Length: 500
Image 1 (cartoon, one colour):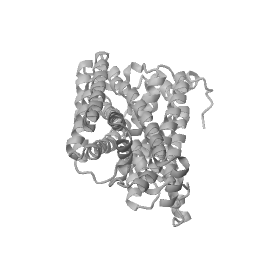
Image 2 (spheres, helix red, strand yellow):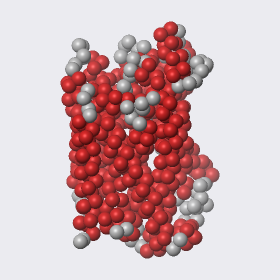
Image 3 (spheres, helix red, strand yellow):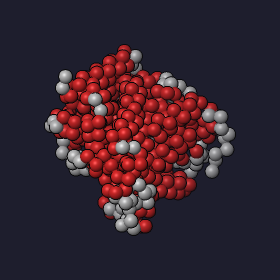
Image 4 (tube, helix red, strand yellow):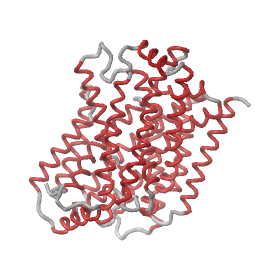
């Protein structure tokens, strides 16, 4: 049996499993809330693995190893920042957001929570939030489709556009019908596949090179600074500081990612966030370590045996193809697809909720039927997928570059707003709008300046400061808001003393 046939069998099994899960989820999707939030019934292990898989996307197995392969361990600060950020997100945001979204008029999306939390009757906050989601998620979804196209080019020597369209079509199918539950359940399978692939590939590669000592020796021979967290000798202290600060700044993005925090909202109870945090952080630690090791070991392997990848972001794909049995390599390739598709499905669901729940329902009176909302939700998924696919046909940036920009956009626009809405009584709708807009603008401005510092850091600080200052100036006590804030503190077992 030829190697390609084994690979096709593995991919066929994977695609079939994803479609089956989507169909089973479709049978359990009866109304709009179940389509968008699975009826707030996710067990902690599903929420944890789903949040991790939808977070990491194709950049975990392609973008991050590619950056490490190209630059060395100094790019590992991205992994450190992400691990810290994910832990704090589960600890600080998850339990309180789960409680608050239900207490505050049963909000099922982030924009609706902002509106309900701050009693914004103008609908302006909700509308601007939805526009931010649609803009940055269309770019984010496009990065997943680019990863799908690159995957098929590298794995099969196939056509980029054909591969991109195939990945998009399968993801779109199970997302259209299975909704949030379908995306979450497929995420669990995909998350497990990702972490196994990122353990197996570097482990086998180390053995092929000749052990840890030989691997380390080869990595440092290729570049003296490859195993240094502060970069090579020719890198100035200032340049290294920018890279380190930028890497750590990735962690700030977690607080504002709609496709991640929506998993917190879907937990069965706020108290289950603790066990989900343990599972999710453990998964993330193993996955990030595997991705960093894959990039480093790729340096050693290809320096010893030749045939280095033309595109650094395909290093894990090539290692799996040359080191593993074709059937096992096929499942590793399927894990790469899992990383891509898990995030893409979550992004499409959130975009759909922004279109239907936060724009259409906000202006449509009287409220449409549940069946109409489900149809509109699926139409929203399709519309966003088409736009993202058009952008992905001729990509202008790397996978990591596309993800970084969208990650910064959400982190700056929503991160400070999420934290302040959960922990500060004096937040106002005017302050929230000012902070969200200023943070979004700063992402574009700082990116255009090309300073070497990741745009998320200055944009996050700008958004936080503007939100706090404007809220201070416009605060008026509202007894209903005060009662909800106190109830939320009580629901998560905290005191009501976070009054700042």
